[in-house]
Image (tube, rainbow, N blue to C red; front, side):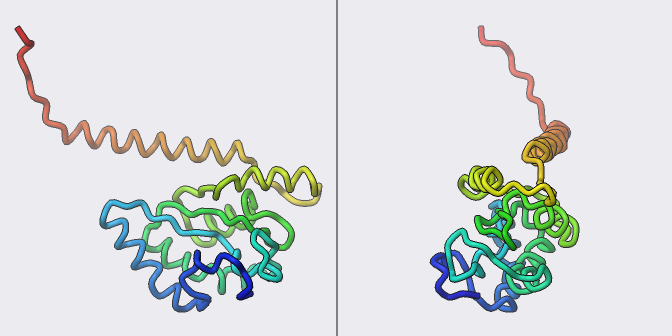
Length: 178
């Protein structure tokens, strides 16, 4: 944690135990009111070197998730529907499009099944970074595959709800206007 980080207003606390203690309850309360909850920013934005906004967080994966991702486990268990990726980098690679963090950890290890959304222009910043620092040894996430994944979830959601609404609909015959 670096208290020089300029976006502390976007955090609830620097204490992972405290954040984890209410993250699930907040998600449940919001979604009970019909609000789609979003947890953000996955992950490590408050731990950038020298507190630099959109900087690089250099931590082992276990420390990153245990300390800076503590709120995600209870939020996911409570059914959070979206997670916003963070602007920062993790060990030199932007979090936006980072396959290890967004696919292997968030979807795999943590079991998140909802939508991963970009922060404002996050993928644009990642594209600039990749153009400047392309590495043949790092696996890059495919933005087109992410888009297709999103569209697939939207289509499935639409059709599941569409048929449910049809089954519940009450059709009323109305005479034509004369």
